[in-house]
Image (cartoon, rainbow, N blue to C red):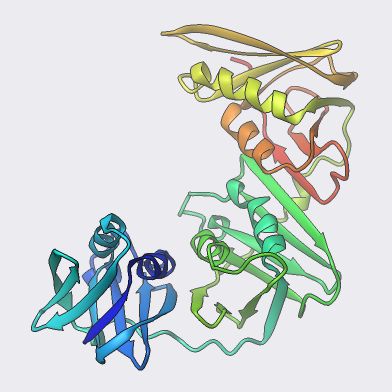
Length: 366
């Protein structure tokens, strides 16, 4: 194998394919990138055993062939090179990377050890403009669980009934929901997509209103844009009945400027991070007093103006969860809906908040 490519195109392709590679595995080949040089292109493939990602770039192929090299090492080298032509050449059991006066020798692995990409015969599909798809994913992805003992919560539930696409994520301490009302997006779908696959999908080089189509069969999904492709298993198991977690009513509200509120909480987190991220919020007429304390460092207090309705309430939340929820909100204002200090609160955009909201469980005042 011998192929010459531009550094930038190689770097961009590595970012796509490397998203599927494993960072830690007992099988070295799962921490590698497969390189396939053929015709006028070089195709890079990454795989962790459950997900595959490929990216193809233009190449001057002098000798076709296939080989695997360490993904992290290759990415670090290419990322450090200047904007020049890069030649990759297999010689014996090594791949030589040459660029101007630089030469690197990388130990190679046989390409036939790399897992083959499974074929996905999609029985249903979902198509949405790329920016809208990213916006829907970003609206909930922050609430995905990292607890691998409940695998189904480590992804986002996609549900489409022919009229409304609903995305849901929860780690049991918070819940995020985004709805997109649009008929004709595709077939009726209910699947839980792993967070790792979603990160790879949203990083694909598709922008604006260009369509992004996700195809599903019984156990996998596929996204193919021609120059790049993602194949991933979907998560098995029953997603919890999240609608029972959403409060059916509320008796108190705070309506605040989102940017100001975000800055207040962010500053308070300087101390709150030493106390399990606990931030206290005390409503008092037309203001909310935000405070935190650290046993070793001291106390902090901020005030923010609020339009309140029966809002004289003291309640505590994980400040990190509040910041994440605010980051996902659109618009200038945010509304916090509450009942009492021991009950969950709901964050919504101040206007048109029915299609995107975040439920946050309270903490002990402390």
